[in-house]
Length: 284
Image (tube, rainbow, N blue to C red):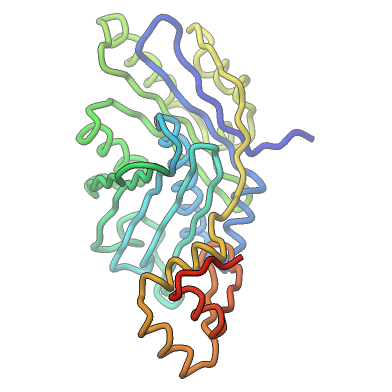
């Protein structure tokens, strides 16, 4: 059976209107299984993962795009990240005794959201996401409208076993015909059901929604859960906290142990490792 973890771009021929579709299955379940997430938080994490994938489709370089939220409600942290080659990871931290609300704003409470774009080479960019809409999709649409000046429609869905989404965008330079097309396809996209996005393949879904339009669907790209943590990166984090702090931890605990918050990989460093780190030697 072919993987259902896929991403595809599409365009409406001879127009400045484009789109992206994504469907997550195994990758979403693997990420969601990293913690005992309540249904409401699991669903929001799925929506964020889908959004990070479709939004990263506009990246013109190698790097990552992440959606990050820090809140004062039951959901303290939400983070979803997608790389240029469609590797995803994500997490949520929450107060398990306080999760009783399932609305977007009630879960996050007061807090901030941001989009962070991190090129493998070059400077990182971060943009603030307005929190004026009552859904993650609505807030991200507002972000595109204000920060990128690109009218965008997002449809995000997630349940206990899968997540999926659809994005439509009207690019700069649109003509009057493009404006008419934009209104038309948005009206059609508003009719999409969660079950259709979660269950139908891209070709069937796009034909069902836009069968009167000429749509070009590009090749599918595989999506996978893959954490970017490594022993080398963990050592880099230790180097950043400083020699004095590292040796203080060693003296107190005998070793420095760190777990990746995304995949739970375990790293252990002894005194010899820290000696080599701060003497400038490379560890393998």
